[in-house]
Image (cartoon, rainbow, N blue to C red):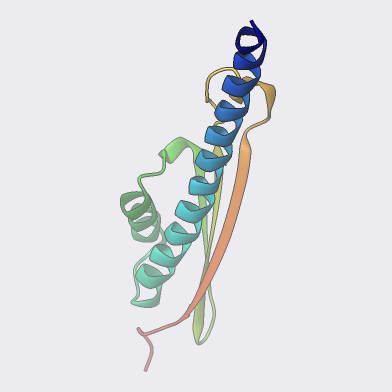
Length: 112
């Protein structure tokens, strides 16, 4: 009888843990995407090619990703902003979408 009362709470906690893991994965992927974009920009890729590299290497949905590139005299910085849907059953609708932001700076290799 007690199991019937506890089981829904246990399921809800497990779903919350799953949602937390999905959001953590989104953060790691966003950081990786920024690094990939910075690598592309460091060798002289234009902004469209940098965005393509970010999307290709990270598999993030294009409609939820913003990429900005800042080129300095010696360095390039790529900022990636990703709005991740929280869509794990029962738990996802209770919280807002997760916002991930990552930045990566690398030395330019296309200058002499």
